[in-house]
Image (tube, rainbow, N blue to C red; front, side, top):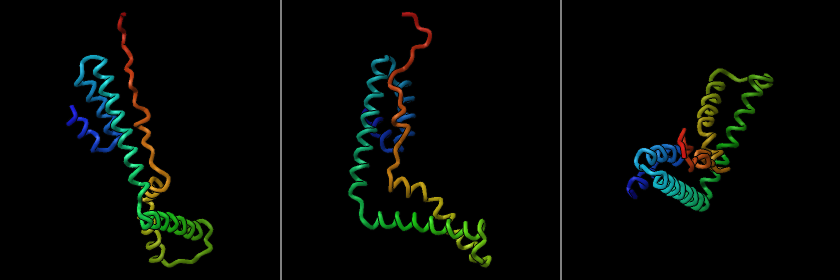
Amino acid sequence: MRKIFGKLTNAGVAETLKAGTKLIDEIFTTQEEKLQGKMELFKMAVADRDSARDMYAQDSWLQKVFALFFLLAWCALTVLMLNYFVFQTIELQDWQIAFVSSINGGISTKLSTIIDFLFGGAISGVNNVKLKTKRKNEDI
């Protein structure tokens, strides 16, 4: 059992939780075993998040400077592109437009990672795990 939970926690937490709860439903037969397995999986996910927070609390100053630099560069390039395309206050040559657009596109792909780094990327899937299963048409 521990090996299964160990493998599940090494992958992405949100997807692992979803896959883990499905796996638990398939492996265990009684409701008590299913609930116990889901509780164990949830505890491991919470412990994983806590260790990640501890890890990011000790980040290097260089990582934070890079994240802020890329965020500020993206903002500056976006303002430059808005001035050119929308307000038409700047005259740029074709190669300059291509260069700025390429850099802005590259930074834009990393923008969500930068924002997650600066402000924390909460895993909504962990918070939405249902520990209780509804009974379907069972007579008591």
